[in-house]
Length: 370
Image 1: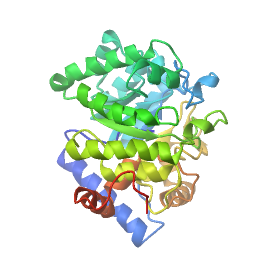
Image 2: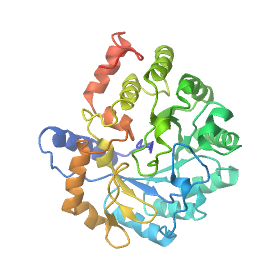
Image 3: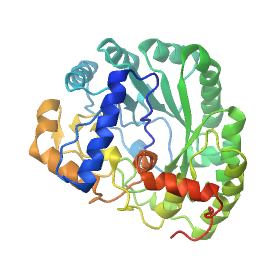
């Protein structure tokens, strides 16, 4: 859910397209609600299978079959390029479970995509696999870490030994950042079982010198819909506030690589109001989601209605159904999820006003949310 939208080393044309994208979002919010905003980023679920057994996710409960072949993914990537998208995120499940993952990623690079991103739990990212992924063209990584120690992380991830392998992957990537101009980020999912570790997790990320992103626990998105997950996303307000009060003092002394105040404030509201309709969903407009079995469209919380095996990407994006659906998703006529809430905040001036009020001491984390 913390798929990256950062763009390193953008050229002038890409910067102009991003500026135009957010300008169109402003128009869509305030002037022309049905304005069609075409996606710029593809979120490709190479597989929906996983090698861990997270208690916050249900994708490992069954084995997804009949996933797109490498040749089918290559056709998808070629169509994405024709439609003018400028970035591809490879995700899962655990995308590195596919032995042909690097072949698919390299094809995106060969097709001219300059911005390639990988979401992974890091367990399979040993030195040899990392070299293959870098050779394929990936320069941006999100690594999932759900605790500052093995006990906390593996209580969520469900596999003994996973923590050490994940941290080794992060350290391996961190050592290569400068030579390969890599973007690296840790993703920590805030859950009932680990919320007390949030301040320690921020210190841990600082010690590793790796920026941290906070995923928001949810049971509404397509990989997380399971009754067994619901207790993990029911966080006691007092527990969350206690963690945030400690975070507040930490942020005031060191902000680099950490979420902004407005992001923590959104996090606090998320567990009371998962939709937060006062913040329109830029994420749903920016990304085109393509699932491992070919489903295309929808968003994190709403399933696709078409399939790339039977319909071209161009036809899907240009169809009236896509436009109408994404108009609804933008205004959050949806189940809510919190996915990439930081993007939804970054293009809104009110977020920066909140941050300035916090810096002035007029607002604090842990105070009642208004």
